[in-house]
Image: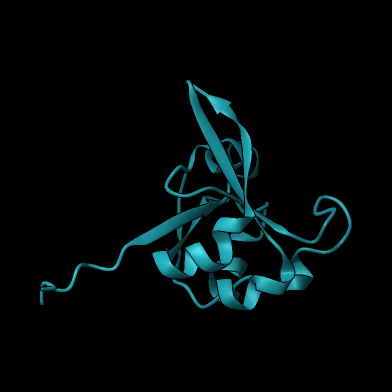
Length: 121
């Protein structure tokens, strides 16, 4: 017999260090194709995030950009369906594998459905 108690919704958080001058825009307007053109520095038009629950990659980029770190919280089911297949190994640091999530423009409308917060440093 199943328990009648519902479990809290699990969320996955991914992290973005916005480029200089883009933090507030991404926070307020969300991710738009115009902000990620198919030319440098976004050679493929995708948006790059530090992977689930590990903001270390975003922190490294924030040292240069100094815009803070944008956190996007996604429910587990949606993350597994849309974003988990976009995970790639970034590198290894302190013995831990670090993951990045590369979100193409075609998924920006889905990404924008989830809450965002911009945290300083």
